[in-house]
Length: 436
Image (tube, rainbow, N blue to C red; front, side):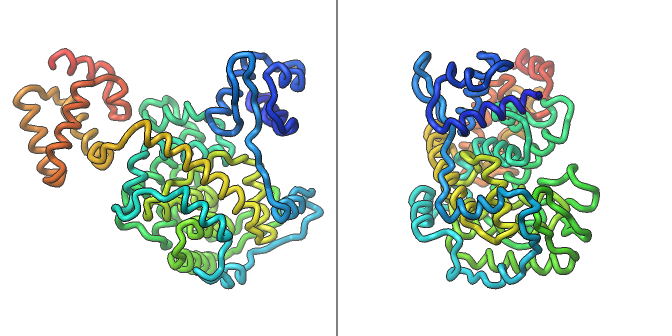
């Protein structure tokens, strides 16, 4: 049995117990083959990732699964989906489901959900699009990349994902499919954040998000391109629509309806559900839907949705309810719970790191200048002249002084953490530090 299989059994045992339990009691349930130190480490990881709750200290520490409490209506749909596949009725793409949706009249999220989500998620209203998400930029890159990849079966831990996101491919050693998946998430998230002032919901944007997420992971010519051949999805009776022209037409209809929805939460949920349901791409459809679902939050300065506090099996089952029944009830309930959890996590992150708008807004320019300075070994007059000239060429006048301050701050604290992802070797850093 693999390490990941055993880790899943730990989570399954907690789920079966359904209450807070000590490590010793959990080890009794698990039986032989589970080392105390290893299980303790896994439990700490799960607590950090938000999939379990850890309370108490030392010998009084208790662990409990995060509750997935579904309404009676959701449970009814899930009970149908969790039957063996041969007992479920074959389903094909239902065009009338999308056609019957009337923006700002039809709602998948009920009024209470929308009210609660609005109260929890509102941030920096009235400011430029993307202001809030830039405040927690690294946190959203890490959390959304990790959780969206986790829902696809990616085995990277949150800490491994953080290291990969912050250091990039150059510091990550040999690339594999899981690393590429995470790095592609980083690029797709960066795209919607950095283009917040001009991004809109249309075919081009959705295809661009798919391209960034799937680049290197799908066959050449299918990244960012509506498919021209059929696909099948495992573990479901659902058969998606076929034919490129029909898929393009439905994607266009989908985007038009989505762009007309005024409530950002309904708009987000609509994108999450219908992009996945259409399956317009050869693969990477659900990942595309999860990143696209954050566009309304970036545009309106609401807290983003990182899909933490979301059990992978619950997510898959809820998605099958959409595929086979066009029933959004289970998905709406896990969307609601996950968003509220995301808000609490990001408030804590924002308070802990503070917000320096110039550092965040001109991060890439600062790092580009820093790389050039180190490689060219600029010091003294040459350094000051370069910083002044670079600032005038790349930074708006009102931000130039503060930009120069941020660049000098990094130069005064140079170390491996500052140059991560710049393509600077340790020897180049040491050489520059020696002449400063």
